Image 1 (cartoon, helix red, strand yellow):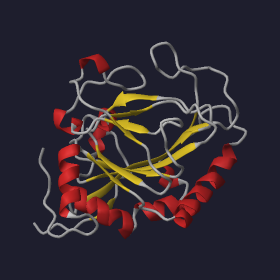
Image 2 (cartoon, helix red, strand yellow):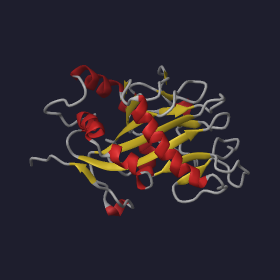
Image 3 (spheres, one colour):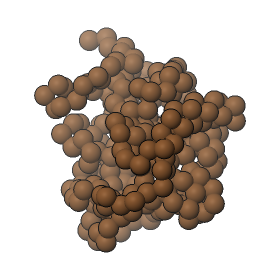
Image 4 (cartoon, rainbow, N blue to C red):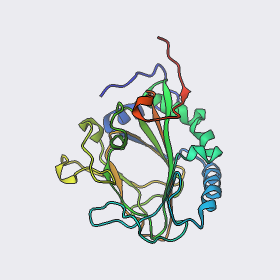
Length: 260
């Protein structure tokens, strides 16, 4: 695993950066204040409310579905109107999220993790509605863009308290050093039986906390069986631009400090 060296740290300590490089993740709590979390949630709710009567996916708005016996999301299953599972590319429809995504607050942290060349990769809000939020099987995010270099970092921001009961993230520390793993099924996932034996971390977090993880870090989450929602904002950044030949569009440089 290779990393670009930071000339000076902006947000993290040397010990925190060493931990991320060794373990493939880092938790910072708190990262956002209650008022900052409230501002983001209110902005997201404003947009989500416009889909309150929806019963079908539209654009980047994806609704909760039941899962079949193999864990894939079933199609044509009746759902409760407006029960959102995620908003993909949320920066395109929520200006407050776009502002935070490109803020020095976020980018200083990202620069510590991946270096001074930072490109926007993707963004989403993941909802786990109370008593309905579905599980997410074990996977590497890189499985969704496997034709790129596996150097991306995701900032997973807890907008609600996240616990085992309402479906917090689980991850395998150090698994980013295993390299890319084959994914399969419609709901991309890895074969758990074929993984090396390793301890799992249950990443319970308070609202306002941040989990940064490498694109190859294995992670998953259980369904929300509680009476509390679990919202999370995910922002992914890349030290490399994605070429048009790879089928991506709209990549933009958020911070470039090349000297060569």
